[in-house]
Image (cartoon, rainbow, N blue to C red; front, side, top):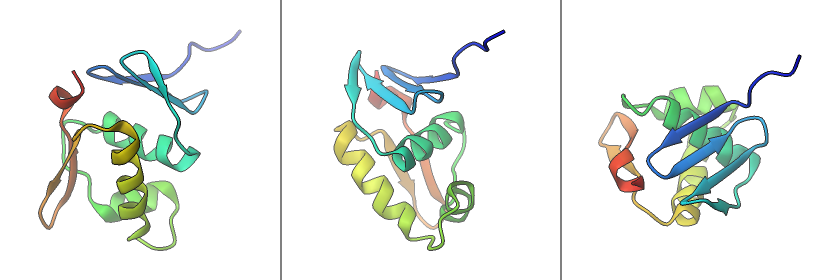
Length: 99
């Protein structure tokens, strides 16, 4: 028996974990696999600040600063300020920015 698709939602943003796809307002956002994984972690933890170390470990990145590069590209592709930096702590998703 097939499992139901795993999908995460934040406002108008939808992340398909099985197909490694994301859509905003019903339009596909073309992301790399790493960007989809990063987005899924952020959306799944939208209720709390996620640190660079946590993201780096979850994504299996050798350099923690690689998270910054992935996040920068993700922000450009989404085109909305949906992730807020919490100084010296990490990032948190702002679902209202995705509504």
